[in-house]
Every structure is written in C-alpha cells, then in structure tokens.
Amino acid sequence: MELTNRETCYRALQSRDARFDGRIFVGVSSTGVYCRPICPARTPQFRNCKFFGSAAAAQEAGFRPCLRCRPETAPDLACWRGTSNTVSRALALIAEGALDGDGNGVDRLAERLGVGERQLRRLFLQHLGAAPVSVAQTRRVLFAKQLIHETRMPMTEVAMASGFSSLRRFNETFQELYHRPPSVLRRKGAAAVAGKDVTLRLRYRPPYDWTSILSFLRARAIAGVEVIEDERYFRTTEIDGKTGSIEVSHEAEHESLSVRIRVPDVRLLPGIVFRVRRLFDLGADIETIDRHLSADSILAPLVARRPGLRAPGGWDGFEIAVRAVLGQQITVAGARRYAGQLVEKHGCVVPDALRIHPQLTHAFPTAERLANHAIGLAMPGARLRAAKAVAEAALADPNLFRPSGDLDETIARLLKIPGVGEWTAQYIALRANRETDAFPATDAGLLRGAAAVHGEKTSSSALLVRAESWRPWRAYAAQHLWSADGDRAAIGR
Ligand SMILES: [Zn+2]
Image (cartoon, rainbow, N blue to C red):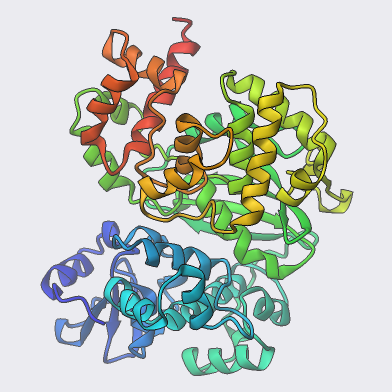
C-alpha cells in the first residue's frame, strides 16, 4: 500500500531530510530498489517514485533493499505508528519471532492476540500497508542483512539467528531479493571480532540523552545482574533457560547504540535486540514528544535541559514488576538492596565463559522459580507475598507485561494482583508494558521533582490535573520530573 501524499514525500527525499528516516521508504520503479529518504544516491525522478510507510510495504510491492542506504539500519519506529493496540502487540510478538519457524502462522498469532485472522490482516494493511507475513519476512531479511554486513558470523548461523527455517530457504530468499548469494554482501575487511561475541549497531532518532538514561539505570542497577562502568551498560540475560550477557555503549557520531552480545545460541539474538531497543527506548519518536511536552511551561525548561530524554523500558517485564513490588514505600537504594539479595538466592548462575564483565554473575530469577520456592529473605511479609503473587500472575498470564495500548485496561489487569496498588501498577505499566501515558502521580520522587520546578509543594491530585495536557506522553514527563528531582538531590537542596 502506497502513501498518498507523494509531493510531501518527494520533498523529504529531495532534501534528504533525516526527520523522515524510518517513516518513509521510497521504491524506485526504474531500478526496482527501495531506499531510505537519506540515501546518498542521486534523487530519482518523481514519476519513478513510489512511497511506503514501512520497509515491509515496499518489499511487498516487489522492491528490494538498497545496498547503499541499507534500509535495515533505518531507525525502527514501527511500534509507534498507528494507534492500534493489536498492531503494536502483534509487532512486539513478531519481533520476538512469533511468525518464525514451523507451526507459527498468522492464525496462531491472531489467536494469541484474541482477534480473527482476517481482522489482523486488515489492521496490518491499514496501519503498516503490508501483511503480517510480509512484515515478518522483511524483518528476517533485514536482520540477516545486518548480521552479514556487521559481523563475521558464518552464513548457517546468520540463517538460524534471523529465523529462517533452513539454509536453503535463506539462500533462495537472498538470491531472489538481492540477485546474488548472501556471502557476496559481506563487507570487505570488516574487522574480525574476538571470540564469539556478536556486535551490532542499533539506530535511534536523535537527540538521545545517553547520560541521563545511564544515571537512571545506574541508580537502580541490581548487583550481579547489571553493571555500569566507563559510560557503558552491562547486564546478564536469560531467555528460555539460556543465560548470557551484553554490553551496550553509545556511538553518538553514528546516532546508534553499539551492542555486544555473548549468548550460547544465535537464535536468541532477535529477542535480545528487541529487549535492548525496549530498555533504551530506541523506537521513540522523540522530536514529536519533546515538542509536545515543551508546550507546557513547567516542562519546557526541563526538555530544554535534557533534549532527547528517553523513558527506559524494562529488560524484562517480570523483573520490573518484582522490583516495583520490593520497592514499595522504600527508597530506590533500599529496593536495589532487596533485589540484589533475591538474585543472589534465586538467580540462575551465568557460566564464566558467558560473562562479558566479571561482575555479571546471575540472571534475574524466573517467575517459575519464585512461584515454586519459598523466597526466604528478611523483608516485610507483605512485600514477600506480593512478590510471590506477581510470579504466580506472570505464570498464569503470558501477556501480563505485554503492551495492550489501552492504559486503563493494563492498569486494571495489574491491580488484580494481590499487593499491587495504584503506584505499583502505574510504574509497571510505564516500564514493563511500555505504556507511554502511564504516570505514577503519587511517587515521592515525581512530587519532589514537580515541587522543585514549580517552586512550591504539589499534591498528587494537582499534579494529575496538570498532567492532563501531557497526554499521551505522560511517561516522558515523569522521566523529566524524576531527573529534576535527581538534580535537586545532586545540588543538596
Ligand atoms: Zn538507497
């Protein structure tokens, strides 16, 4: 499905306007190639251009990815497009491999989302201009292309890592799409990497406030699971019982984060990349958000101080929820201590060879572990019962921490967990479910931050009234207020 505002799209293309990168893809009928608007190649003639809202739509229309501007490296804004809850959830599931491998068809995906198959196809067409299978196929091809270009990984592993059912299928797809075997696409002279680590570059839309997100994560880092050192973020991972670790650093000059990954199975890569994007909020349309929040007189100076401030997601929804429960009514430092004890006692030990940093010793405990074992830590009984209830709820509902797109529905679902109140539910929604409009108005840090900016004490009800105009980006406003509270603490007021 093509975009209809062709003149506007063409102007973006002529000026190589980076603001449209990830938002517009142009298919050139004379060459059969599709490009990002920033492609360095000569601007094609208007009559030869077809414009699409997603790489999948361009590919579905028969265009193949350009080898110069590499559409696989465009910032991935897919999750932000459209307003459909179902499409957002479906995209998250597809990114985690829901349409890869045998038996994982659109019918099953639709079933998981609680909609009919035909309805799902219609929604995809409406919001992305492409069918679910095309989106999955495009994702596989572009991820494989990135692995070929940026790593030295053998082709059999690239095929497996990107979700192809067989090496033959992978070779055929590349031959068909790029008119050459995948090995030819490997960048000449790409530096050989030490050991088996895979390093990938993940793009964002600038600006990006790396310092602030790192200090937010530093204040909450769990011993054994996370380390922040030399402006880098390290953490352990656990997916389907397989542990590993990652290192994330900022490459401002490339408008990217660089992610080094050490896992025992390459098939874990898409899931890990998906989590890094979520944790570091790489899909945010930050200009739109900053512009919207700047319209408010309280927030304007905060946005000016921290342009590109992101709302960090959770690495894992369950981990965030347990930490939120442990942190009820205590300081961030206190919550961090409890979480560290929990990890030491119940976390899965990461083998030495998989530790990218020597202090990464454990993966966060699984829901199964906490639901089925006595937690046995010295902390208030209500807190322990709540942590257990979260583990049981997570086991009972695999969608508990997935975005639903409807904040009220998410909050209602979370409030059903014994021991989870309004603050905890809003915090979990904000970080785990990635509800961009979540807002824990009773949070002490938020209220202090608001008071610091406002010059006088604010009640949570007054703050909620004020926050009405911050919708649908209240989560970002919360992040700015937390940062303002951090500044206040730093200068000792
Ligand atoms: Zn191009």
